[in-house]
Image (cartoon, rainbow, N blue to C red; front, top):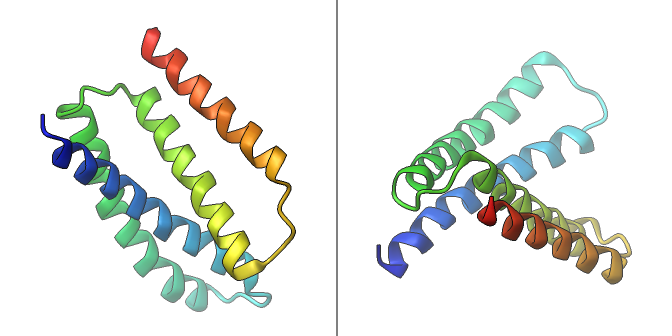
Length: 117
């Protein structure tokens, strides 16, 4: 297994989480929803997210030999990163760096512990 394969697999999962985060952001930011508006906005983002995430999860399981819990922790870590970036660059709410660092450290600890199980 080469480094480029690992980067490709993790990139697939990360790109999927970007589209999921964007879909969730648009769902929360639009005040008046109709079914048509929700369908037309969400379906392209969710379809792209599924293509990337499902391929990344399958490759992570097959080639990297990661179990579903490890893949879940990686995916959640990417969601935290995407939400932080979205908040920092678009929403521009104040960020408590200590809380963010503690959250990320706890995720890394959980990932490390899941590797030892």
